[in-house]
Length: 404
Ligand SMILES: NC(=O)c1ccc[n+]([C@@H]2O[C@H](COP(=O)([O-])OP(=O)(O)OC[C@H]3O[C@@H](n4cnc5c(N)ncnc54)[C@H](O)[C@@H]3O)[C@@H](O)[C@H]2O)c1
Ligand SMILES: [Zn+2]
Image (tube, rainbow, N blue to C red):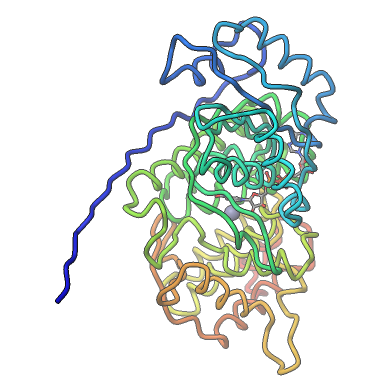
């Protein structure tokens, strides 16, 4: 004898991603509007979490936030001074930062309708977003991403997480934000290296979803490498939009299946990040991972060699790396260490190993059979094209036939 009840729950989520400039200028309404979206006639309690790198680069930020709150006092009530947390990957590597934010949320008496406004790069967004999502089972989050990568990818999506046991993003939740406000001005103080690294995610999303955007990136590679503000703006907006449309229409926003196209190139990228003890930026590791899986796509017969060369040279022209010596590191048995990334990738998602490969720019293919010998060949191909920082080298290799 048994009894069962079928339960189906659909929970709609809705949030807006707004591109703006000078978000804390008192006359800029977008933050106040975002907070008041659901309850217009109420003072919304908010506390701010700020990335230390941002606080350092913008020393008047706390003061500006206070002025903003004064100006919008009918809508916004600051709940204490901002909390400054370390920037970069380190903040995802130590659980004490999560506990510290939980304590602040408890001590300030914030409730599920209060806001955590998170101002910072992808790492701070991931850690503070996780803390906010787990306090009271979720306080509202408004993200103000301050890096190229967090504005064009991580900050506009639905995931958060921190690292544990040497595994990237092992602890985390799916938690759509209440709103995302991308302020272009923050990028002015970002290190050149981070401004370039983040472009890798735009190349990634173009390769899996939009050939025309890949062509645009190819045409504008030099403008992007030289940090042209208009090219950067277009790149970020289009990349963010493609990420959002994928989440919205891809059919699996909370990644319940085994495929994860937005993580094209990421199985090796995540492994390279830990193999290099995070000396590589996430975006740099992604660029290498994209180059690798592009050449793996050639090895398995999906993609033409000429297209792979084009992808490689676009990455290089943007100023992104496409090889790292850790790709060749081997364990005691002589196996490539980076291959552990495949197992970790599969474990993270569950089910059959599913890696995204390419059949053309804009066309992603789910692939289940990653032959180590073919991956090793693709790594050799990347190595052969490395050894020069001249971005045009890959192209001249191709023309002269010197490349493998
Ligand atoms: N949740 C997701 O869906 C998702 C997606 C992609 C990447 N990520 C994660 O994002 C992280 C990488 O984020 P990132 O590339 O934004 O780098 P980051 O957060 O590591 O920041 C890089 C450095 O820039 C500093 N910084 C940030 N904004 C600044 C500014 N405006 N001016 C000066 N300095 C500033 C930070 O303090 C830090 O030192 C990784 O942990 C990655 O795993 C998450
Ligand atoms: Zn990424």
